[in-house]
Image 1: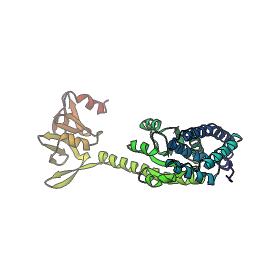
Image 2 (image 1 turned 180 degrees about the horizontal axis):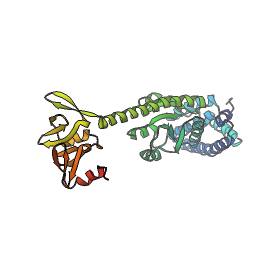
Image 3 (image 1 turned 90 degrees about the vertical axis):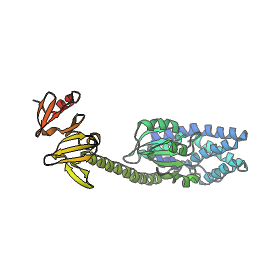
Image 4 (image 1 turned 120 degrees about the vertical axis):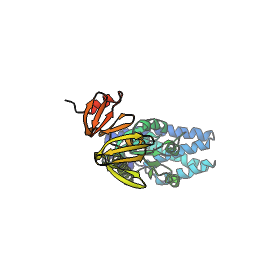
Length: 106
Length: 239
């Protein structure tokens, strides 16, 4: 994945309101690992429809981090999972790890 | 304009709250993580606008809309563009925004919603005025021999039930109309007319004097039933 996550959207949204920025980051730091773990659990159990739901939810955070190509990857992977296609899994896992590193260092 | 937010993802709720904060005259009343809680809230509160996530576990945004009898205006918030067509099958949905939502897109959406909300408010206002007019207008029309004759309320002194007919006695003329006291009472302004007996409605401003069980209006003595007397006394400007 060539694209790097960024916090441009969060900064624009906060519009200088640092209290909001901190609050949002704290929520994302709490929610993201839960969503990531839920996805991995469902995927490992071959519960692909539930995993597709998890990917759907993760899309919002991918978009928030300004990752347009990754957003499209998530759309494709979500659709694939609904028909039990898993070819994009490795690429998606790399993306999740990349996001995790970025979020935890925010 | 007031609004609520329904989204199972806290990040999304907080982002929409922040966007709402940046728009004038838009108050977030409450945020809900699921539609069920929102339904309970909507049963007790009037809301102009709902930001609604479509993709929620158990109960989707569309399920939620279908439970509402008179849904407020709704802006759908979603990470999925595929629902756009379905969304516009609902009259209450004014816009469809894809996450992550930017302030520019959000502001456009609010402007759209405002037009719809204002329209609803105006039509409600018109309805109220129309209803008020029907009740408090200055006259009514009665059908006599296939002619509609206008009678001013101020000219009516007594209305008397006569079998299947009522007789409307005005200052100048009497009209016999096929109707009931109950029907005409619904058309008369309450503050001017009172049913004093099962067969009589009177114009209370035309009372000349009152005895124990009767009132004098013009040259007519009208009986007052015991049960209606207290209300009559209440309406009079007694010294």
